[in-house]
Image (cartoon, rainbow, N blue to C red; front, side):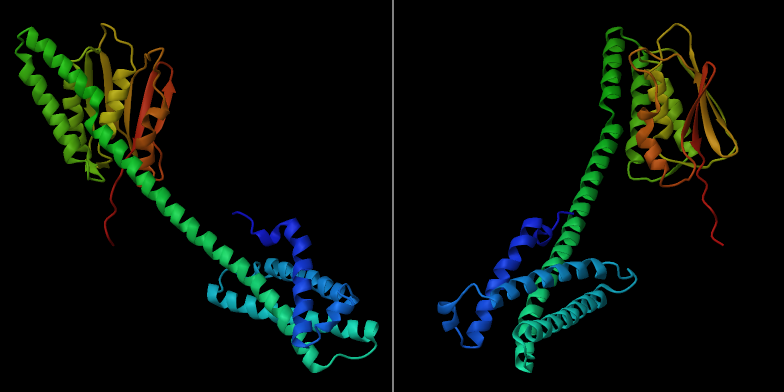
Amino acid sequence: MTRLFIHNPLFRLFSPIFSGIVVYLLILLINNDVEQLQEQFLGKELYFCIGLSFVIQEFSRLLLWVFNKLPSKLSSSFKLLIQVIGSMLLCAILVTIAIVVYYKVILGFSPSTNELWLFNSIFCSITFIYVMLHLSHQYLYKENTKILNNEYIKKQLIEDDFIQFEKGINPNLLFECFEAIIVLARKKSDNVDDLIDHIAIVYRYILSTKNKQLVTLGEELNAAKELVQLFNYLPYRVITLTTQTYSNFLIVPGSLLTILEDVIKNTINSSDSLDIEINETHDSLALSYVKNDKINSEFNSSLLSDIKKRYTFYSKQKLTIKNIQDKRIISIPKLITKPNL
């Protein structure tokens, strides 16, 4: 929060001089005693007004800190009322004490009621302006913060939508598929139609689940098997996928597809097949394989940051990656809906 100018040391030092002179001139005008300016401007009354202005401003600043300590459970309008009325009452008491002491000690007589009213009116106005400046600054800060937060949320939503759109389209995979189709077409292979079918099924699933929060494990596994068949047409290792599941719990759409794609693309190509196992445990779905990462693109948790973020909305359990000897196990939390009681 940017500090208000009333807290600036230079303002605190020089503003009482200006306000003290204004108060002094105002009192002379009200008392119809302007001729005193011609006789002596720099008199003790002026210094007293400047000194009292300094005391009132610092006291008002102290009250701002005190009233900010009020319990947050109080309503904002009630706190505002207490702050304004309390500040002006305390200011009036301080001004009254200062005027009485000045008149009795310096001038040798007691001030009249009209003089007390005059001084209190002027200095309470200064306190009121001081408090209003602070409150208006706080209000503007809250409103601007709210606007900035809303803009930040909108920005995050747009970025998330763009990321989801990019993941849904997956241009890199699409271009690799097109290249594979071109190669197979030049060879006049009968596998072109099968490859196109696999592409269509995978992308149909991706686009159909774009607006879904969760899908069943069965749907995701069917799409995952099609994706594996699709990758077997691309210049990667031959992939075998085995699954052992006994329930049809919920899963974030695209979780398995993203993990499988990252695993396949970050594993060194060789003549040996890449065996991937998907097994269901008590509270998670475990995907395991023998790790053999590429040197320049090692598999790590940052690749799955988007999926991890999405799972935090649905489960306290986190998506984890464990390396046990030469094996890597990726555990996806099981999402199970609780029946309404």
